[in-house]
Length: 601
Image (tube, rainbow, N blue to C red):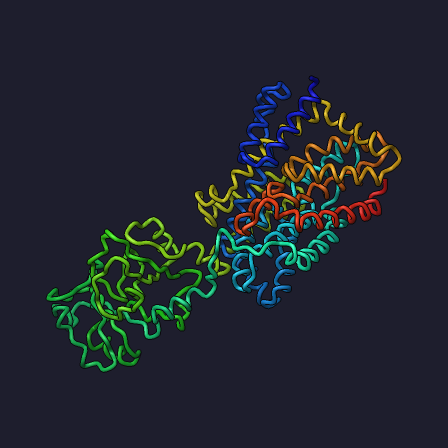
């Protein structure tokens, strides 16, 4: 069997394994690598080269950049501004979300935009009481169309532009793709809004997301944070020094209620234990009464009331966390009360037991009690690793939804803009720009190293890295020329429009089971060979391949973006073609009509 035939057999087996869908897609990619090496089509270095390919590095870095943008609250801010501008009408929200995804894809590619917008769209769906399944697939498809708005929209565009240079013609300009991309975006958004609700399933998400946008006000109402409390530090020489905590009497100050006393070491002072210097007396009451008490008892105001009305419960620097005391926790049996400081700077705002507020008095904690803690976001995030309490909501998720444009948002936006500028001007290769941006996000502490690792979809990395050697094998083995000659025999010479339709069909069909980047890597040499043999300009042929490569709309494995929405949207494998097929046919018509008008045969 010739090398060309062998490479086509490997391709066919790979496609069958993808359609079979019994093996992980990453596993199929690795098997393909090993098969290429075992059959002698490529050497070991080539078989493994895909995992270090610039395209793979670029995509991996975009996941990190997207995570940084989202964690800094930028996407939350964009979503809130979106609702403020368009309102909460389902149609207006759908159009706005789909348009935003298309524009964002032109900046950070489909994978990055879907990863960044997915949490926001789930929250919006909850807010407008719409099934996420009606929004996520149209969003992903609009993002696919948006990848054709600029050169930076997809690695496919870069591959096609470089292929034009290799073929001896001028590369495509930065916004050349928008000539066909803009009508594709408009058409895709229209079909997503009008046809989507009729053909897509109404299913619940496998990853339900709570709407935490009004988290602060809800917690304040639940824990009845209306009056608040004062923390008053005992100065040396105060008349309360040496007084047993149980005998501390504030009846001389009407309107002031004693909540509790906390020692300088952080423990509750109760019973016959005397109050000492630097201890903290926690009281509630009217500000006028407290103002009279402070100088007379030689106290210093360490903290004023924190209530939802004071706007201090949650902002860019501080926030709140609801925790539950688990069984066998060291906190069980410990005395606590509102106003007590725990750890470095976490303040107890309220305590509830069996759904009832325990009030502003000291109580021994029991398993199942819930506490509302207030402090810096850094201290709150440390509770994730605290085994003494169980967090009710993820602090990271709360901050993303409730505190748009967090303290790191400025750095994240600057890094993103610099990356876009580098990509637009072509100063450095895309992989370098993406890697530099991802590194800058970590170095400027927009995200942590662990967040960066978790942000990368390693399945996507392995999938693309494992299939790139297949493209190399198809080109070097002569399979590309073989397929090109067969294609020309079918469509005939002197029929450029039929050639475009045939190439679109071939690319689109292959693109449903192989990543769009790998698909284009496979089809480009075939398309160039077909154009050269028929005397047709390679520019319209390559632009059509870019459009067809982006039209990965019929299966969840077609693009990482499609994979990302599968679980949150509650989709099944056979759901994608319901909306994807009409969109695909629209793309074919637009491509065949528009492309020859701009790039002549």
